[in-house]
Length: 163
Image (cartoon, rainbow, N blue to C red):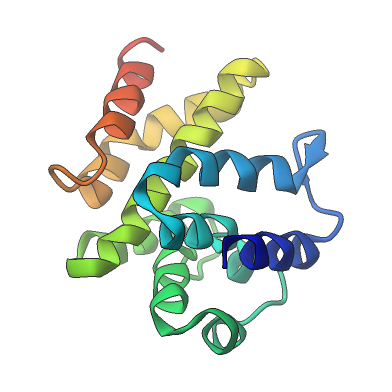
């Protein structure tokens, strides 16, 4: 199912870029970070941005990948709002209420942020890294769950502390 999700996401993201690279580079990195958590985590990782950034609907995700994956993608998709601050505030509030098996979405969100921050450091994108660092406190308060993916949070905390 993960190869199906990857192919679906790459087709949906079409010509979108991740910086100067094909968007698939970002999707592959997030999936790599969550690989040890199982195939469903990888499927959600590949699909995490399709509803937010493409014309794909949650119903399409549900029809093809099932209701659980669709619910996780819904959790990961930004809420509407005119500014990033408004969107992220509403999205983090939504994520702060997630519990049970759907915390898998939060694992993918942490991996997504780690992939983004690693990319910022590798490509010396200080402006974007500073944005992520400025959001880090509320991001962690909303998404962190003890024992969910502590090694990801350890790296995120180290990046936050050293930048």
